[in-house]
Image 1 (cartoon, rainbow, N blue to C red):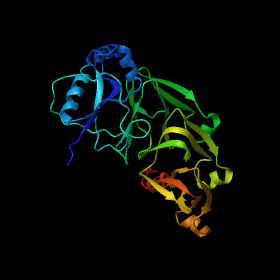
Image 2 (cartoon, rainbow, N blue to C red):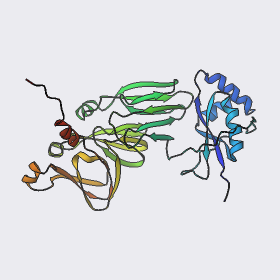
Image 3 (cartoon, rainbow, N blue to C red):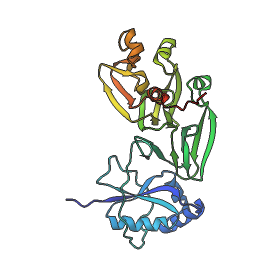
Image 4 (cartoon, rainbow, N blue to C red):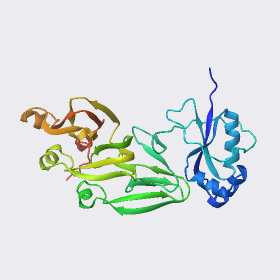
Length: 330
């Protein structure tokens, strides 16, 4: 069996109490190049600065670079599920004593590098924002971030977002001069899902949006009075289009379903669906079933595309919890 090999990834992030200027200068000394070259490399972070090396060599270079204050990660080449990052052009001549800690693998995805933990119950999203790029985030979702990230709050969507039940504001986080990390915790206990848009359009339920890159356009879409009223949900959907990363969340776990012709989903279990599908709100049975079955209205999708559903319904949970509410005695 072939031995595993590794890439050394320069994330562009800094350890606490280290200034960008000092770390850049120290890194230039290690790689025997100019600070300007290092700045150009950091602007592309995360990037690979050493490729296809054994574990001991990877750890040696990692230790040398992290002494400057920059954070490095080691990516397993053989276990990677996506193409490795672009290799930077710095002179790779660093040296340092080897350390014995095991090499750690790092997952790469199309678009930004991210990690989802705690799913499907209490998902937590960590996103690596490249230098001088911006991530837009639903208000109040930020849980942690690097100190050099800059936040700006902007009014988005106006009255349409107000009617969806969302905040009127979105926060934009920019990684100034160096790459940075942000941690996001949605308000709903449940799953998180990533979709890379490349010209496609996805419609989200009113509370599902978590974050997106700047080239993803967010708009509110009027469902129509009848669809909105009978669905028991919002009169508006969030229309996401363009090119870039999109993250959305659910109440409960998320299941992705490929629709080839027709499919029926309870309205309270819909999280998102693609633009190729049309839908109508109908009763699941007769009027007797409507009032006594506990099912109510369903969404009948037709066409070809994807539907993302959540395994729990907030309405069903509140109905169940209602009987356990404390009642004061008179």
